[in-house]
Amino acid sequence: MLRVDHAGEYGATRIYQGQLDVLRRGRAAGEIRRMAEAEQRHLAAFETLLYQRRVRPTLLQPLWSVAGYALGAATALLGEQAAMACTVAVEEVIDEHYRDQAERLADADPGLTETILAYRDDEIAHRDAALAMGAADTPGYDLLSAAIKTGSRLAIWLSTRF
Ligand SMILES: [Fe+2]
Ligand SMILES: [Fe+2]
Image 1 (tube, helix red, strand yellow):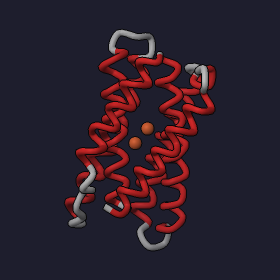
Image 2 (cartoon, rainbow, N blue to C red; image 1 turned 90 degrees about the vertical axis):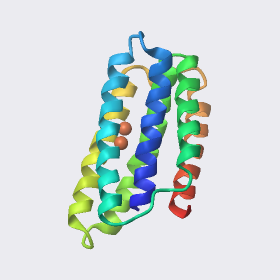
Image 3 (cartoon, rainbow, N blue to C red; image 1 turned 180 degrees about the vertical axis):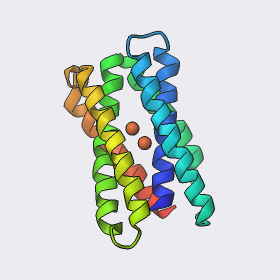
Image 4 (tube, rainbow, N blue to C red; image 1 turned 135 degrees about the vertical axis):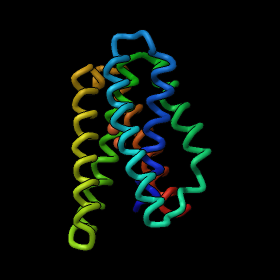
């Protein structure tokens, strides 16, 4: 669980880095930067947990670095709305993922469950902020969203195993 969560938060920082490099001076830059800062906090916490519990990080981190950045930059190149649509899609998958983990962990590790639920709240707030910025008005929203969700679920599946 820690390995995949660490991988996911790492991927999130790469997505936002890709978006910020493209949309640095755009209207959405402030919002994206705030989201990116939250992902940095999440990532740092999981890094500490990996270290404390002697969990190795995913072997796929170099892949998530490139794939995350490419996804962020590509959606940002389509425009601010597409960048926000990317956030909505990723956060919806993470919302499910963290909810599922919290259910399975609840009694076994209340402290970690609390952390995961707090981060899940942050991710839901990111989704809502992205929707408020017009994510769903992106041309081809359903297709874009479905593709990103499929990719995110595949990344979760892979990071759980490798
Ligand atoms: Fe996060
Ligand atoms: Fe997020």
